[in-house]
Length: 145
Length: 248
Image 1: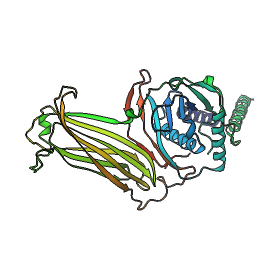
Image 2 (image 1 turned 45 degrees about the horizontal axis):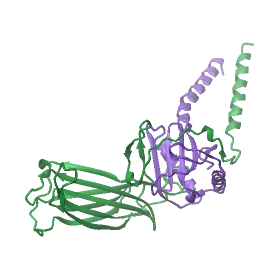
Image 3 (image 1 turned 180 degrees about the vertical axis):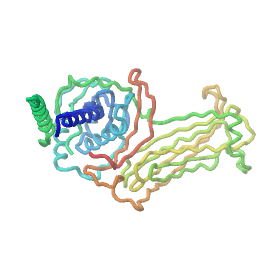
Image 4 (image 1 turned 90 degrees about the horizontal axis):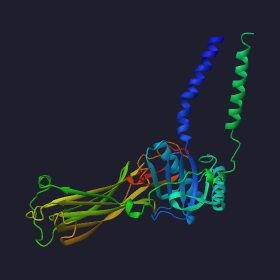
């Protein structure tokens, strides 16, 4: 392989990485916050997702914070991100109901339980429009598969 | 000698990529969370209540458009002015639908319908719609009009979903422009849409043809709001997804 062809391949690789990176970054740009606010919206929904630039927050009621609820909330957030990667306006997405039909893998179930436990023990912080409440930022965005 | 710089760069690339690979390597579930509330942006959202989820439409018709509505000759009780209230439900591959209608001969009429979507025996979502129609002239000599309302929720498959609901049909007289202060003769009649189940013919697994773990039905409503003023811009229809095509 000649020097020129190697250089061309490296350039093509760099171009390919550069071309795909912004889209991937756009999808992963928003951090995911889980919170149990003390000022929950007076609606029938047990979970509310709030999407704004750079941050997606999932708000739970204390009584309904379970691994199953977290799983379905993360799935709803995943679908919203797929449908609208970069919403131009704010989005409130009440989850008005869900039915878990198939169990997640053991690995994911453990992660969901640990995450719920971490949220229950989390420190209280400011939640802006929703007052204060326990909150955590997901380090592993939507969790393991 | 001329290729030495290139080799150095190649090594740097390999070194860089290897770190990237190490970084992306699945080392199992990590600590699920990072407690750093200071890094959380303030959440700015409008205060919403249950009434914000009711989608309301007020339509003022004109005599010209009213003349295009049904004008069949019907024999009605002269003291009644709301007729044939009914509701039906059905589930298609794309929607759970409840259709409500009635005839009326007043200058104000409305239907408020609540559609319930269920998966098996468990209700997973409901949606209330209110539509009101009015015409300027209170008296129009017995002309009968029809008010029809389709309350639709989006579903990603028919199989397994069922739809039902109830509606409240109203008709009354009023002076347009009086902002509802001068009204008379309100009649209210209910109707019920019995449960209709979606068909499962030819349905195999979830849409997309794959069975994914941790699945289920999740029903949401999308409320869009202005980030600066926090005013609600739009309330979308109820949407229920079974997770076909998603990976978590």
